[in-house]
Amino acid sequence: MEALRPALQGGRLRGLLRHAGGHECVGPSHPDVRLDHRARPCLGGGRKRGQHGQALGRSRGGFTTKIHAKSDASGALIGFDLTGGEKGDAPHFAVLLDLGPDIAPRAVIGDKGYASKANRALARTRGIAPVIPHKDNEKGKPVFFARTLYKARARIEQGIGALKRFKRVALRCEKTARNFRSIVSIAAGLCLIKFVHTA
Image 1 (cartoon, rainbow, N blue to C red):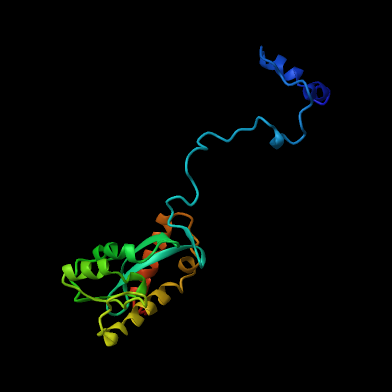
Image 2 (tube, rainbow, N blue to C red):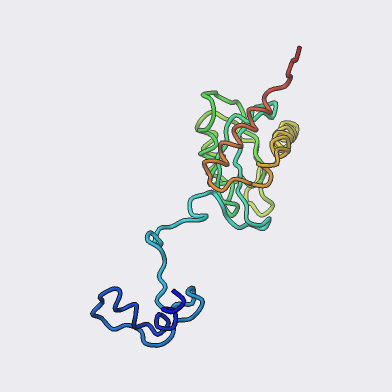
């Protein structure tokens, strides 16, 4: 093969070996074949891959996934959904109300991210008292706000903190949304186990 290499670099031998009738490049080929001007992507290159549809997005915290969680009064996770880090909380309020077991809560506690008139009206139509603080620039704010009841939101934050003790949840180690959803489910299940008895 060493004797054929000078003829091969001329480009004519390739045409003879292939029985090609078309025009073959006469000039010498580049030693690095990756720099070939005729290089094409592999088949299926037009498909959308990567982060598309994998609950990833860029927010102020970086390239992250947002976990929209629903918990009970003790802070234990009973339902969650994943979106990209750039997604807002308020549009996801209706989804959170439908997640989890079939229970009828008396109140729903959320932070200012869920504050909107539409979300409060949606909760009231279902017979749920919304305990969501009003934004500072919101017009027509009521004077009364259930601050004592709102303090229970600390349990939700503690439940999310317990969930983030799992490294694979905190660092979003999984590539796909399906795998990350499974890891969060396993971590939430382990958080529900309060005691482990051994012999």
